[in-house]
Amino acid sequence: MDAAEIWIANFTGIAFDGTNAAMTEAALQLAAYWYEQREAASFGLTTAPVPFGVRDLLRSYRDEVTGRVVAE
Image (tube, rainbow, N blue to C red):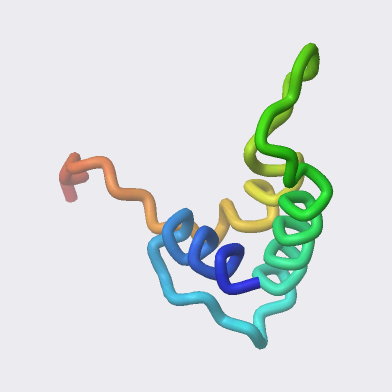
């Protein structure tokens, strides 16, 4: 779970909040996916490092950093 929480903090740019339902669900999905896909290598299969839906759960919390300053 620690690795999933760190991944979420890195993806969103904010600290992991265990009281946030979306972040908790994303962490559980991510930890379960990594557990299921724990083989060192897969032959003949394409695997994604993050399951579908995790990014969608976290997208609204993500701190977008583009380096571009929006004109007011």
